[in-house]
Image (cartoon, rainbow, N blue to C red; front, side, top):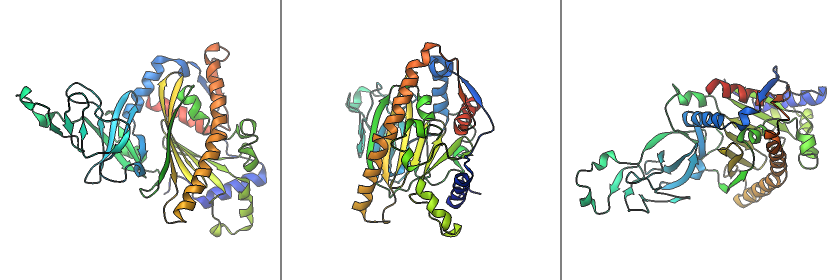
Length: 373
């Protein structure tokens, strides 16, 4: 059984909400302590959770051929993710086994990784290939000094890393999720910037439509609805549907012939700290990495839809236009309000935040934090 509703069922529910002036509602109102957003001890516990939980690092489309690699720091640990000659994605801690210097930086394509400090070299499978002036280390067993490997799970078009043991079956936490991306999608933009807020404040802005009219009154709202969403849960994860006004035209089309393309946006929250937005002309993967209690590094991958659907140049132009609109309007507006909220956190004005019936995906997120911490 699919974890999330079909497009047809989502459209039916949206049209019902429009007709009746309703929206999906949660059963629970939750009060969340502000302390959980400002406490260094709490943040350290969250980082420990990140290390145990399978967390997406990049889309499969970022590593299309053998030797392709990216570097990324997650929960304080620097990694290399690389596509091997056998086609498998592997993950290693980005630290030379000699004296710890990172052996790769940025992204690229390589046949081996060479430490810039003393020249020790490693294969794409992490094996220690060579030691500069090896006679200076007569008793060293190279077979035991490869790069430290971490568990990698590649599924649904995403590459996940599990840094540390602690969960019985990490793969089972991903079993019911859909195919998000395919390897033949083009990554046309990759970005990274810092948001001056706690990572949870920023994440919460993605997964509720209660704020659409007040916060996006001149950008998203004219094309969408005020506080009208379909909200679903799948294990620790969730999906929020944001319909466009043009979806009303589908009411006159038989359900079996309805096409959701261009009528809605799916916003997935992959627990704990990843957002996937599937929009009209492009998809976006966003990873929220806490720098400290007050700052979040936001890494994004923007992708065209699958090749072959339309002319490649046209697909890219549409995707770029789509992505620019979102990043320059709604995303900018969300960042402004969460940074303003961050500035008031330590004021003592609130001891708790309150999440109501229109914010069930946020309630679910915090319930899962309680469950796994």
